[in-house]
Figure (cartoon, one colour):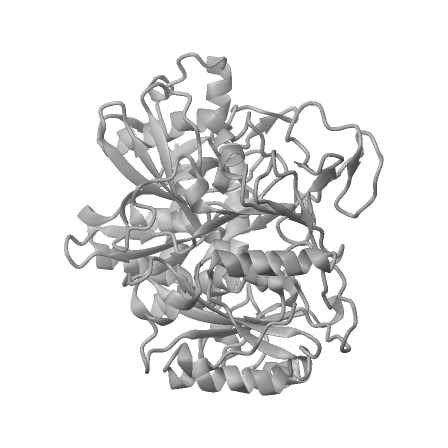
Amino acid sequence: MLLQEVCLDQWTSNPSLITWIKEIQNLCQPDSVYLCDGSFAEYQMLIERMASEGKLYYLNEEKRSGSIYFRSDVDDVARVEEDTFICSKNKEDAGPTNNWKSPEEMQEKLQEYFSGCMRGRVMYVIPFCMGPLGSKFSKIGVEISDSPYVVCNMRIMTRMGKEVLAYLKDEEKFIPCLHSVGVPLAYGEKDVPWPCNPSKRCIAHFPDTKSIFSFGSGYGGNALLGKKCLALRIASVMAKEEMWLAEHMLILGITSPEGEKKYFAAAFPSACGKTNLAMLRSTLPGWKIECVGDDIAWLRFSQEDGKLYAVNPEAGFFGVAPGTSMETNPNVMKTIEKNTIFTNVALTDDNDVYWEGMSKNPPINMTDWRGERGFLGKKNASHPNARFTTPITQCPSLDEKWNDPNGVCISAIIFGGRRDDVVPLVFQSFDWDHGTFLGASTSSQMTAAAQGELGKLRQDPFAMKPFCGYNMGKYFDHWLRMGKKGGEKNLPKIFSVNWFRKESDSFLWPGFGENIRVLKWIFERINGDRDAEKTPIGYIPKIEDLDVNGLDISKKTLEKLFSIDKNAYLIESDEIEKFFSQFGSNLPYEMKRQIDNLRIRLTKE
């Protein structure tokens, strides 16, 4: 099917946008240019086109209505941090946790890479908005891509299409995002199912010009440029400049049996249970959890009441499939019953999907994510980072304010990671500065969401180490300054959680729906309804105050969940200090003071 070139000035009168599109057209030399309108008809047309070229599979319409399945190149399955760059003018502005290239050097490389890269392809122009249309929180971007897979996913994940341009005034700035799979085609040549070019893979962010370039990958986190690239790396720079926060956080609403409702934001590294927590189905009678977002939060202090409000800039879920089941997260399973894009899961003989942990009795015969058929019980039938992309509006526990342009008022901020030991189930910070230290000193075991050694413990401040677009020492300082801006009475309370503590390789806490018990304690603690024990690391719940009614868990196990190994924490403080040392003069003095005070508290009789 041929896509006809459109007349740009019929769609927008923004001269910068028109000029930029024409510049990219001249650079990339596509067969044609297509301006995406975001309609369902357009989505269906692209799906049919990819299906006719063998790029996707239609799933069983009775089981997965409107859903499709993609299989990626085996070398293009996750975010690639080693190929991700922050191209600030000064290396120090990128900081030691980011890969840096000078803007001049990177632009020279990108000009070479993108020159003629779309020959034989269609150049799709994707106007999109991160955040509710018309909200003061929101930012408009335009992604140019040669991947119809990207177009279809962007339609789900963002507010995308022609209506976005109505909010882009003649002289208003937008964030330009250029993407190519990096494999030009000869005219008439058949495409491969998932093109990529790992040898030239590069995801480059330019914080000074607020622009993004991605080459050689088709994977979501590297190619859907509104997500981690704009909504975190570039947005974090804008947030520092404009005094707000762009964070790797879920947002949930929690309602008590008495009808009182609060909103929490929580930061966890990828594949550490953010989606499960955001869509948690409560096991406690009368307590309800509703989802505002599962991955990214933009937070601003209100000029009206001075409190901190948050919006979810996304419009869909890009979740990890393995481990998801009716037992672990029924709301997710309900959400992905229809109109979902699955990537790198296994395919059953009746054209349904499967992944590890989905059921206790796997299908006998499947086609695994690599395309191999006919096996029984083979390990990793799906890739550990297999994904689903699905509209947020299908979530059965969706909060009514998920698209509120004013956001929701945040009462608590939670930090967590995947830790086998040391970190207790839950504790509260002493104050905002101490809470900032808890966020800055977060560490977690690595997961399949990024390439690297699985299970290895690494420092991941605020769960933002892969996503902060500038020097993290200055990022810590920004959090401290935000605390001063908010004022003590308006600031959310800050907590740390760890569902993953183990003994003899078994989890001590049941997790999943039972995590409502921890959220309940946080809720009641904010209200002043619960006392706590002051310890060297923060305020720990009194064991009798954690609601474990109906839960098969012993007092001895609870004591282990809240035990504090002072020697282990002293060793941990050394690791934190070592990690902090790389920031040099950019590390706020307050962070050094927090380490010193922690050691004093740990060694005090």
